[in-house]
Image: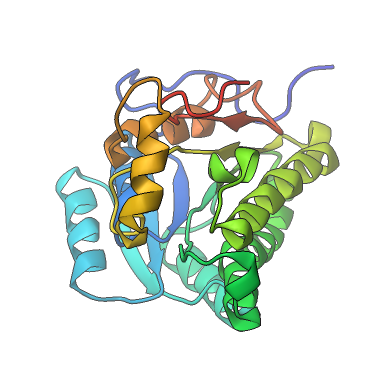
Amino acid sequence: MSSPGPITTSPDALAPLTGRTALVTGAGSGIGAAIAVAFAAAGARVCLADRTDGAALAAVRQRCADLGAAAVTVQADVSREDEVERMFAEARAALGPLDTVVNNAGILTEAHVAEMATAMFDEMIAVNLRSVFLCSRAAVPPMVEAGFGRIINIASQVGQRGGAGMAHYAAAKAGVIGFTRSLARELGATGVTANCIAPGPVNTPLGGSLSQEWTSSLMAGLPLGRSGEPDEVAPTAVLLASVPGGNLYTGQTLGPNSGDVML
């Protein structure tokens, strides 16, 4: 059976996403910002979505524009169905059909199960897992109709190995991994792939919310002995989005995690 969708390389090997259009959630800082800029550098048009449409998101848009990319911003809470629908409508109106969606938006809090409020657990699941379902559901039908698409979901190594004080976060991220594998099997030969990136500790504003005790314990066990930087995670997203680089990946979880999880 021949593979559906584009199978040739970009005419410019330095811009493997030329002609592509991507939506990145949680693009105002950290890994989302780095992925958006990397996509722009690789030639893609980018829609940058975040819960707050402030100076930080505008600065990321400007970085993308400085690279010559068409870049727009959308403010949306991706845990809400109505806002996800509006976000996709605005992105498509501004940039046209979307062939790549990166579900990166997320929160990070810390509490042991015995002391965890139900509201904290529910918020984590809504923002870090429900959003992936809502955005994937909105993204997939046009991709299937076009015969090509890339869904890239940002999980975490905590979803693979667990973490004391982070049961709710681990549950959400493990859910993202399971959801992605199931989505990949559903999409099969449609030309649309679904994959995860499960970073380890990365120096981002989100990671800065963790206690020093948790951070020190995690760092002590890293074979590489250091946290990563967002710019070290972003190339994995470019690979998964690219053709032919990402063609054979689906249902996979790639781990730029400093060796914390080895599979």
